[in-house]
Image (cartoon, rainbow, N blue to C red):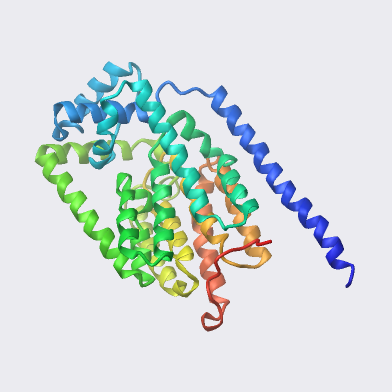
Length: 378
């Protein structure tokens, strides 16, 4: 037994070095993807054109398909995009539409990269090695390269979730709820997180989120007016029917009608129940369960949205657990990496994580466990 520490020390250092080397190797592969996969029509091009149309013609006409296509094709001929993000996205981009597109694209892309970098460091433990690992786990994540070539909205939701966790931990629940409302820029990505927080007892955070949400939705409805609302609903329905965006959802497995609605309802209830049953384990678990539930009930997603899978993995990795649990999180990361290639794995990962959390919680005694702040320390 006396020789164990001498043996485990070198092997532990080698394991840490091997993990970091593997992540940096995959990050280099992502850099190669960025260089070799130029995108003439990034998401931001569509956002920029439609937001500019809204600022010029009025936001009530922004979701008219003819208006969208006129402005998109005028500025980016051949682009096939359609934008159905709610009006707050256009208000956010309004200052950038006053700038030349190239400059606006650079500013937006850098801001999104900074958002995920900050998110990774907000949730990372204090250990320097682990901070590097958290950052590298994003740079090595295959969907991450899409930020650099497409500039989607997903990273802003990732940052809002990381800051929501931090402010709850800092006992600033109202600010946490306000920050969580940033998810309304793309509401389906984190729609069940407020419900999970409410179920876990974070009522002030939920109420703050609800107040901001009601204000944002109410203002959007007033600005759009009846014609704009009708156009928005119609455009959203057409995008929801596009098979490309359905690949990362339950729709290909269940169908788009009653079976999917029944599954979404069951998942919503299960998310609330798991959040309530595991509330004693800390807000990390609550947010992770809410995010994965949101991914599961998403009717349609874009490839850039898959970066959201990192938040539950990062948060759950902070809580002390068995080697089996840590191996499960590693498997979830690999599944998320592969989900860009094999979309069904996004559903598998999103289902497996809450089920694992529920099973682990059922096997533990709530009175004897407390949520821990860090893992892998030392």
